Structure formats: structure tokens, C-alpha cells
Image (cartoon, rainbow, N blue to C red; front, side, top):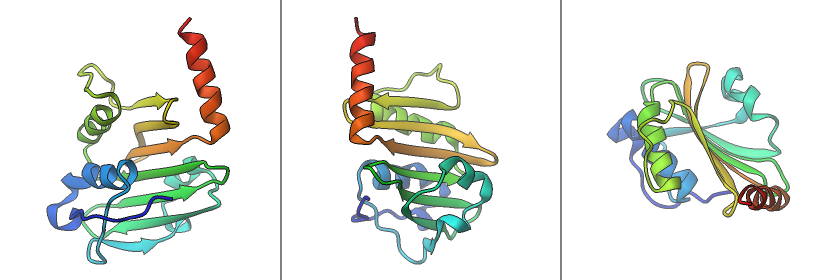
Amino acid sequence: MLTILAAVAAGAAGMADLPNVFQATCLDGQAKLSAGEVSQSSFDQMPANLRENLGRPASGKVWKFNAAGDSYLYMLDYGSSRRVCGLASDTMDLKTGGDMLEARVTGGVDRSRTRAAQWINAKDGYIATATTQAAYKVLQINWMSVGDKYEAQEVRAQLAH
């Protein structure tokens, strides 16, 4: 699991900063969220339409933002090195969040990208996703297990030929 370390002011700056909270937490592993900004929650307290696509994690941490709208930050562990870190919000702008995520993982933004997108990085072992789930806009990183990472690299090597 990621350790929450440095400072992000999501509550004070407003929901427009949710993509930055996601980036600081899920990509950099450096976010500090105060009790005024978030409340500790649990996986079971997340809305059912979010939980159903996340399966059954072995453990995890979930925070609900104390601001307008319904927003969750989650770090879930599925065992065997499989982890998921994501942010789901009914108020976040998916275009802004998707652009940030794409720029971060690819180094640029494809202006013709559809609203939802997924990027696979076999070398570093993750899948980055910007999508919708019911009323929620979701930014998420799925880390692959060692075996999945190896298989993804093998497939990538075969496609290069």
C-alpha cells in the first residue's frame, strides 16, 4: 500500500483539485489529507455501483471527501502484489482528470482521445484508467502482480515483431 506523506488541500481548494489528489496519492504516494477534508470510511460503505467493479479486496483503505458531491479515495490490496488506487467522484471533471493521467503516464495528451481511456505500462507493471462508473468519474491505477507484469511484457515483446 502507498503511504500518505506530503500535503494536498483538496477540501480547501475545491473539487477541481481531485485529479491532483489522485496524482499525489496514487502516482506519487505523497498525499496528506486532514480530517477536515476527508473522513475514514470503508469499502463496504462505498456505493454498490462502485464496489461491484472493484471485486473483493483482501484489505484496503477508503476515505470519503467532506465536500459537495460524493467522492472517494481508495487504496485496495488484493494479495499477490495486486493493488488498486483510485478516486471516484460524481463532481470531478473526467476530461481534466483524464488529461492529467494521460500526460503523466504517456508524456502527452491525445486531443482525439475518447472520454474514457486506459493505458498499459507493462514495464512498470500497471494499468491506468480514466472512465465512468454509473454517476461517478473514476481515475484508477491497477498494479499488476509480478506474474501479470511478466506476461504483459511477453505479450508486448511478441507484438513488437
